[in-house]
Length: 164
Image (cartoon, rainbow, N blue to C red; front, side):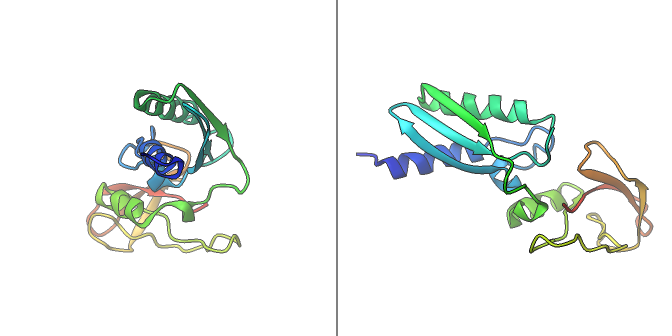
């Protein structure tokens, strides 16, 4: 017999496996936006989700995708609640998520840790060649959470996931 704890763990794994709509190389679990999941009754589940920032345009797609995967598993009622506190930070991105970002040509954010000020460092490591000789081309890239940079060593452009 499946226990409630085992079922919750499986549902959390399924919800966490949903790809992020803006960065499909990462799952919602790897991005760190999936905060929790509880069974609230037979066939009923509540999911807590924290957007990367208030007003994130991808939140509706995340909710739809989570709802779909959990309904396909057999949950009749899926409620996804947005949780804004504590706020999401780039420290929530898992080590696997950071590895995947770099593997796909996006410089991962540096750890901020502790909720203090974001450290200002002028160099960002190129995900292509590893050089720290990089230049900001634009403070914004394909999404508001990334900047566009160019490596001065290999001359390749790349996105950098900004630290928050």
